[in-house]
Length: 296
Picture 1 (cartoon, rainbow, N blue to C red):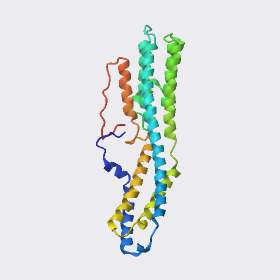
Picture 2 (cartoon, rainbow, N blue to C red):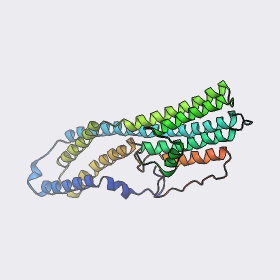
Picture 3 (cartoon, helix red, strand yellow):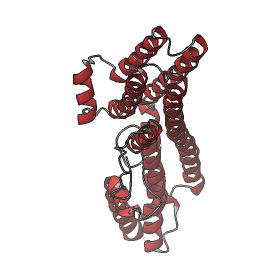
């Protein structure tokens, strides 16, 4: 996720550099020929150009709104994961019978597994190789499954069942903890829905096509009196539309390990620090400082 300081505009321009080169080259060539060559007799009514411009603006408005909703929903989901992770460990610490000899072992097991679950979920959503800590946990606990985060939640339920069998929790407390695990599973499912639901490609192609049609028609609807003004407008207006489109493309997929992503690794670190403090561990890691003006 990009931070609100020292954001480089050049990095964003690099993502649309091909469009900038194409439109700029077209604007210069057509502008010169329109001013001094055989294109000076071609004219497109400004009303026709305005219709295409309006169509682009409406489509981009819809696209940007949908992309922002996906990005914001992802952030809300991970906010719920942070809260439910804290709640799960707090319930284990408070509900488990402290006089039982298995208290520290089961609470530590639940807490450590929840930390691993947060990292594993973020890495699986980004389709990255699992980190060393996740792989170490998989090997030590012989966790092999297609969906590792889901398997870890199943292990949560098994640990809760052990606590119930040892009479460390009553029926009401078991239901409370199980409902928290269910909310974590629900959040995981919502993340997977966002990840696997692709924005319609036809819609993106349609917007891009209309932008280029608009850019093609624009110089023929402008006055030929001032060449530099004509070239500037032919470059500037379509590039603004393309920049808006690119922004929506970057926002629509919040789990792609990009600067505009939901900062899942950063949130997992926050959860790890909070959980380890809650169970009284001495080895609490420090929060990592962001690098390159954004956190992941």
